[in-house]
Length: 400
Image 1 (cartoon, helix red, strand yellow):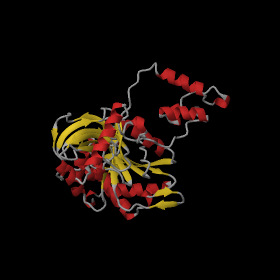
Image 2 (cartoon, helix red, strand yellow; image 1 turned 30 degrees about the vertical axis):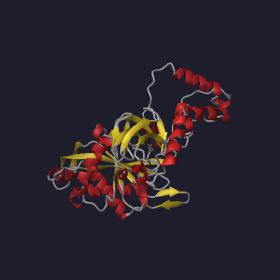
Image 3 (tube, one colour; image 1 turned 120 degrees about the horizontal axis):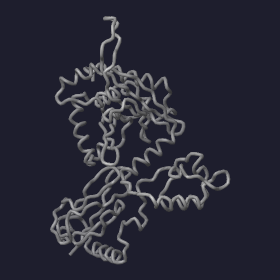
Image 4 (cartoon, helix red, strand yellow; image 1 turned 135 degrees about the horizontal axis):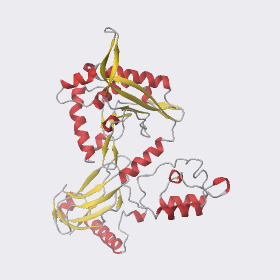
C-alpha cells in the first residue's frame, strides 16, 4: 500500500521552519484529503497542516514542541494505488522513500529535526553592544556565543576583566553560571522574533517628532458611524492619504538609492500573547474609512488569535500604533526593520484651548501624535511636514 508523505508546507514569506504544537489525529485514524492533521506555530502565526489525500494515518515522524524545516516529512498516510496514481506519484519511489524514512526514525534522525541541520528562522545581524559590555569579542568567544544562539547585545551588562575591559571567555562562562541561579522561563518564538526585529531596527539612526492634535471632530464623526472606526484607523487612513500625496518619506535607503513604495500598504500594531503582530491593510489610500473598518476589526481579532492570513502580513511601508490604549500620552515607537516610519497615537485628554472668537479658553479633547523615522531617509523638517499633514487630515474626518 503506497505511503503518501505529509510535507511541511511553505507557511509564508521568509518562513524556513515551524514548531509542531499539537497532533490533531492519531496513527490508524482515517483522514480525508485536506483534513487538518497537525497544528504548527511560526514566529508569525499558528497554522494547520493538512492531509495530502484520503487514507489511513500510518504514523507521525515528529515530536510536539520540536521545529521542522519547510519541506520536511512530518508523517505518512497509507493510500490506495488509485489515489497515488491520481496524485501522479510513483508507487516504487514512495515505498523506497518510506523505508528510508523509517530507518532514519529508528536511529533517532527523523527528517527535518533541528539536529539534522535546520537553521532557526529567527536570525538577525548582531548589534554592537555598549562599550561597557562586549566591545570586542575574540573568535573563541564568538564561536561559543554562536553555539548558544546569543547576540553581542545579550552581553551589554557583562563587566569584562580582560585588557581594556574586554569580555573574556572566562567572563562569559561566569555570566552563564550566574544566570543558572536565577529563575528563568523560555521565550516564545514570537518574543524572540520581536527581539530580533528590534535589534535590526536599532542599527539605524532613529528620531521622533511629535505634535498635539485635536480630536473633537474625529469623535463627533465617529458617533455617526456604524460600525465605529477606532481612533487608530483614522490615523492610519490619514497617513495613507498623506503618503499617497508624497510617498518619498516612506522610501527605504538601500546603498546609495532610495526605493519608493509601489503601494500604500499600512500596518497597525496589535498586542498578542507574548508579543506584537502587525496586520496590513492593502491600498489604504484608495479605500474609504467606512470600507476599511470591517476589515480592520476582522484583522484585530485574527491577530489576537495569531491566525492572520498570509495576504495580511508583510510588505507594509509604515505602521500605526495606538499606545494610548495603555494610558500613555507620549512614546517613541521603533519602526520595523523593513520600514522607515511608525506613527503613534497617545491617550486623549481634555485640555484648555484658546478660542480666538470667544476670547476665552474652552475645553477640547487632544492627543499627541508621534512620528518615529529613519533619519538617513528623512530629516526633521520633512518628518514634521508629514506629521502636520496627518494631523490636518484627522481634523477633517469627513474626507477620510
